[in-house]
Image (cartoon, rainbow, N blue to C red):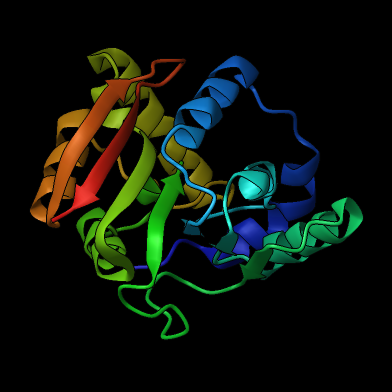
Amino acid sequence: MEPDAKFWDGIAEKYAKSPIRDMEGYQASLDRTRGYLKPTDHVLELGCGTGSTALLLAQNVQQITATDFSTAMIGIANRKAAEEGIENVSFLGIDPFDPQLTTETYDVVMGLNFYHLLDDMGAGFRRSHDLLKPGGLLIAKTPSLGSTAFFKRVALRAAVRVMQAFKKAPFVDFVRIEEVEKAVVDAGFEILETDNVGGTVPRSYLVARKI
């Protein structure tokens, strides 16, 4: 179920220093996400990496619990939070199924560039549903490698397999945008907004309410 924590631990420092490739798209996603957040919200972010998104959104909510499989990533996130003096974000090196995360606790669950890294994406959405309060929101941005053009998709699959063979890439699910949306609905959500935000790889940005 869980992504390769050892892989992410190994690249944590390099990842933290790497610039965001599509800064315009990242900022647009942040702005859209802020539009759904309230000052009283307790937000859970799954797959927070080195914490950049959680720290940028901290001022918009009451509290953020941010988790990642990689304890090295979480170490960097805690360091950044201390340097920036941000106290309403808690970083945990756990997976989404850890009992420390209790059901019907969170107003919003975010998974930005996360669910395609699970070998059972549907289980990830179902767990997110369980963690949300009634009527809570899921905000997900999911690279949809399965929605790329045929020849590009074949080339990407081949490249990823070679990199995985040399431990240079983690598990990646080649999901299509429509598969992401179906998995969200099947998990018990009503989709409020969905959009292909494009870029080098199609990305499904969606917001859904727990029903």
